[in-house]
Image (cartoon, rainbow, N blue to C red; front, side):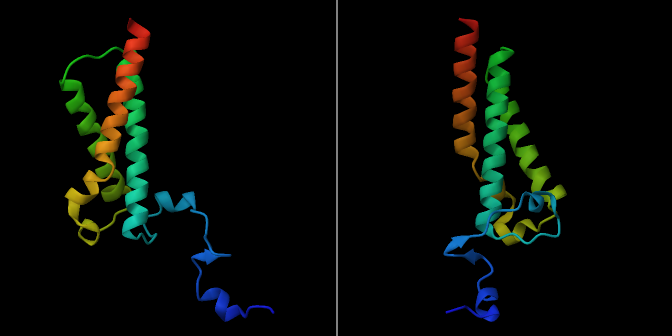
Length: 126
C-alpha cells in the first residue's frame, strides 16, 4: 500500500523512522531556523574542535602557565559568541541567554584541551 503525499509531508523530519541528514549549509545561514538541541550540538562540537586545536598548539609550542588556560577560555568563548551572535544572528534569549549558550560544551572542551596540551607537551618535550 502506497502512502499518500500528505502523509509524507506530515513528518518532514523523518524518513523511514530516521532523522534526515544534517545539512552543512545551515551552519552559515543566518536565515536558518534552529531548535535548542540542534544549536547546542553545533556549539558543543565547535568548542570541541577549538579545544583540540588549542591543546595541540599549546603543547607543541610549548606554552606553560595558568595564563594560557585563561587565554584558551577567552578564545573559545569568543569564537562561540562570534558564531551565534554575528554569523547566525540568533536571538540569544530564545535559547536561554548568553550564559546558557556560552556554557554549551565548555567543561568537555576544557577537559579535551587539557588532555591534548598535557599529552603533546609531555611527548614532544620530555
